[in-house]
Image (cartoon, rainbow, N blue to C red; front, side, top):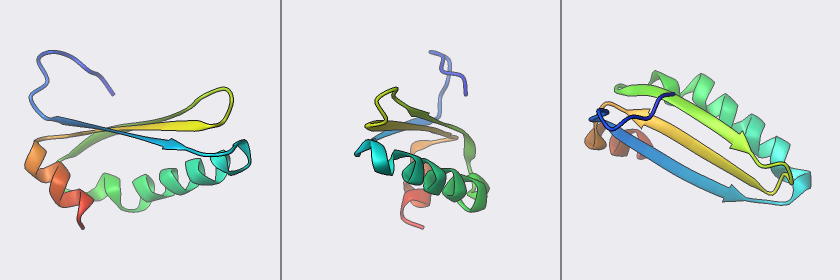
Length: 76
């Protein structure tokens, strides 16, 4: 995923706070959601998932062609 000032779509950033014991379960569930559903939605461009070293936070970044489409996918 590339971020640049020229990008005219929508970037959505979501963060999750959890305990180290649940971080990998959530990461797996998010990967499955992207593989099975989210990445197949109209207007989806790319996504990235990042976990901090302490395994207490996950950041989720996704890019969409435009704001309306990203909102539609969130409510699908």
